[in-house]
Length: 562
Ligand SMILES: Nc1ncnc2c1ncn2[C@@H]1O[C@H](COP(=O)(O)OP(=O)(O)OP(=O)(O)O)[C@@H](O)[C@H]1O
Image (cartoon, rainbow, N blue to C red; front, side, top):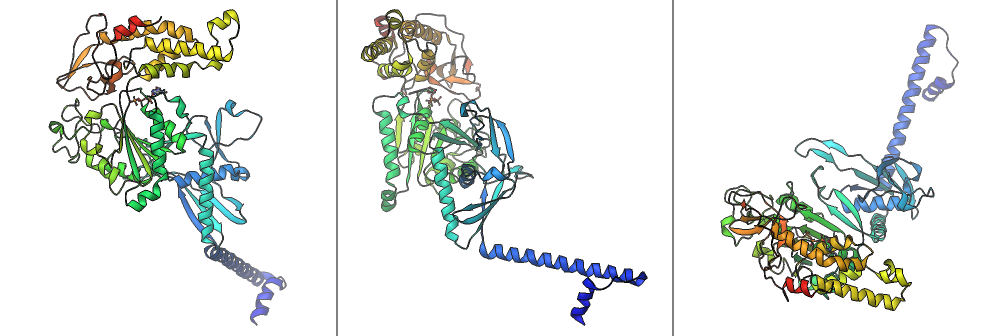
């Protein structure tokens, strides 16, 4: 009866009357139930298949692997079938934009077309089907208010678990290859995202050749050589049982090339920079720990202006007691009691550098304008392995900077305008003479490279004009410094900085070798003991002796070959 009954449901004659309607309804009900059961069975089979014969993985935004995967999908044009994009004006922020090749040169493109990858994508990789789908960020509730990072769910239809590993490695290599042309700078800006999402801003900067950094002879080569050796000696560190990390402190006046050195080094070694400012309000010990532990191997961890966070433990009177900021917290000199720059404690930072949280294979860089404000515990070998002193510009550097600004191929000398082109050797020799004349005009160790760069920029492509104007510029700059009002911070005399640097204060000439404009540093709130003295009347610049110094500025000015 059973089978024939079911068969009659589908093939039986259409019944007549009210009994017939009831029977038809019943027939439709059974048919619907059978179809639904079949559909569910089919879905169950697919699910079983997926579970049995596929591997799934999640890539979370904020983790480097997320970037590798997006890069891989962009490079392999996985977005093509869905064609859903986010549009934004082109900027240095990295968005993995794609090019549609509409005959517009890359430099003329003004917008970034960024595939969203939010629709499912199915593609083949080495004969394996892979499916991806990206979830959108969602607003989360306190205590982790903000956005939850988006996640890419990846399903790989294979039984070979190694295939996933190989796929990720290929994505990583693809990422490294693409990133070669630029330096990737990760910064932690605001804690908009939930836990685990620290480095939420990524910028791409053009690589800077190390030859463009003008330092004392051999200094840049020594830094690059040291870092390269550290990277190559990973196995030696492991065998010797020494943690594979190296710390550098670059200290000296502002604008002497500390940050530029790190960027050039990152480009040279193909490393990414993860940069953090301890003075940012949201950075505390826990955040710092999380930030350090989410840095991948073979990267640069940079803490700029490390003195902004806390002062020297040696300056005992500045130790804050009972501030709730941790026992290691200190107010930097000049801040006054109760001032607070950072929630990071000294012990928190030391833990990150050499404790459990410190990452292996990471180059740690810290920069400061005030090395004497740093705690001796921070500076000990093992935490800071190399301290590199950046001085104001000497004559050799000034000449090198001039030559970099006026390369023969980009300038036309005045004599060439009058008498026609010089041959290459003659022109090089003339430019070298001008560079030396310029260097003679610049007093030794008085100006930062950034200041000289600012002046040279005002004479672009006109080397003779730069030499002629240099003497006047030097005199004006020195005179201006004399006219700055003097203020007293914690009993020490300091000169206020130029107007272009609001909120900064001059540092004392303290053996680090800078004064006037060369000694500006971010200021703390003015303590009651600080006061501004009226400006001193203009007078002939008087020179404060500093190291290293070979002659007086006046001598240098008078002997200048202008
Ligand atoms: N030694 C140098 N060689 C080449 N350029 C330099 C050098 N020093 C400074 N500059 C130029 O000056 C500007 C500021 O340099 P940079 O930010 O590296 O200085 P810094 O020492 O890190 O300053 P701060 O202490 O204020 O952070 C950059 O545009 C850089 O190109």
